[in-house]
Structures are given as structure tokens and as C-alpha cells.
Length: 284
Image (cartoon, rainbow, N blue to C red; front, top):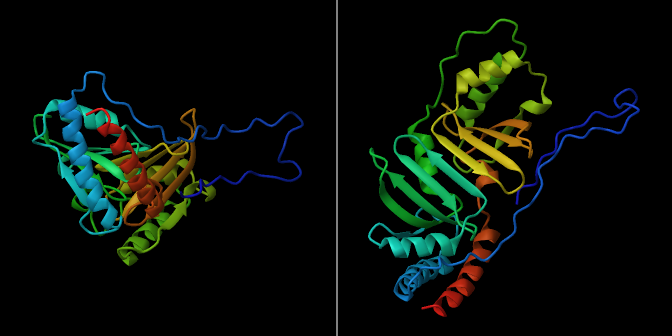
């Protein structure tokens, strides 16, 4: 898992008061795996069908690595409401959730098995038009939405009065965006540690925007990841338990690492999912 970045705290003479220090509350409550539970009204037939779906998906996961271009999926569109409810409850809910607003509305929820995701696509009326499980580092729909709603470059907006570093920071973001190649490590601009004013931030927010892909990771506190108007440029912001922004960064990368399931997570989920399927069979 990616280490949680801690902001620098001033030290030395004159930087501390004589009273007990009033520390900023940091995120707490790291999530650990808990086996999900079946719905009480689940029938043996629904459980049996859910087991068949999971066994088929697991068979592909066992022979296919996490980083393949076409991840393992299982379509649930044609399944009964009972089967889908068994899968919803039996797979549980993990640390990462997401939604997109364009070009289509998609809702994503990681299951309790890391790297296994539930992906729901909504139609114009709000109804579900596609429902699937996907085994991947992060669902492909999030990449597709970012690419479809972003641009390779931006027109530089008018400067704001009393700015200090906003223009230079936007130029750096544009430069790194132009240099980015798929698979390249993230270029991180840590706004928390840079000399920026509120006007600088307003300029950056206005230029880059918060676009159509929003991701929330609860693995350690709350990390909110949002796409921007620029391709492969993301806001990555960490909040403590009081919803105070404690780290504000811009990342130029295909997808921020904080939302990605690792290969170790994938391997662990393959093992645990096999064990859980064996438990489900006892209820068939």
C-alpha cells in the first residue's frame, strides 16, 4: 500500500508554544478484511447461482495477472434480483468507491476482496443498464471517462490580481501533462508544502476544474481523487476525520496510486475468494 504522506511540521526555537501542542487530527481506523454475510432471505438456488458466477470469475483470475489490458469480468445484467443481492451482500464493500458523470454515468464500488469491483452503468432515466464484476487494479470505465472528458492542453486563463505562483504552477502542470507517457510514474506537485496563496489556488481550481471522475479511498482517512480538464492530471486531496484538508496535491499520472489495488492485493483476494466460495457452497 502507498505510504500516507505526512505534512511537514515546523520545529525549532519559536515554532512551539509553552502549552501542550494542539496537534492536527490525523486519519485513523485502518480498515481490515471482514468476511461478508449473506442476506437472511437468500435462497439455496440464488446462492448456488452466485457461486457459479464467482467460480467462473475466479478461474480466470487464477491464470490472469492484474495488469492485463482486458481484465476478467462477469456480466450480471441477466441475473435475477435475488442473485444480484446475494452477490452484493456476500462480496461486501471495500475501501474505494467512485462515480463518473460523463460520457456515461457509472458507479463503482470495490468489494471486500481488494481488486474485485462492482461496476454499474446508469441510463438516461437513472435505471441500471449494465451491471458487472471486474477484477483489476481499478475499473477500466474510470480510465475511459477521464480520457473522454479531458483535453491534451488548456488555454491559459486570465491572470488574477495578487497572484504569487499560480501562473508558474499551471505552466508546470501543462508541461508535465505534455511529457506524460502511459505507464510513467506520477509527477506530484505538493501544494501543501509550496508557497501558494488562496488566489493561486483559486486560479488553479478555475483553470483545471473538478471534472467527471470522482474517487474516494478510505484506506487511511479519506483521500479524494478527482479528474481535471487536462488528460492524466488529477487532484489528490487527503482529509482527516474532521474533514479538514491536510494534504493537497496535483498528480500527473494515468491513475493515482492511492486508488489502485496492488498485485499483492489481487493475489490475496484470489486466495480468500476461493476460501469464501467454499463456505458459500455449504449454504447451497
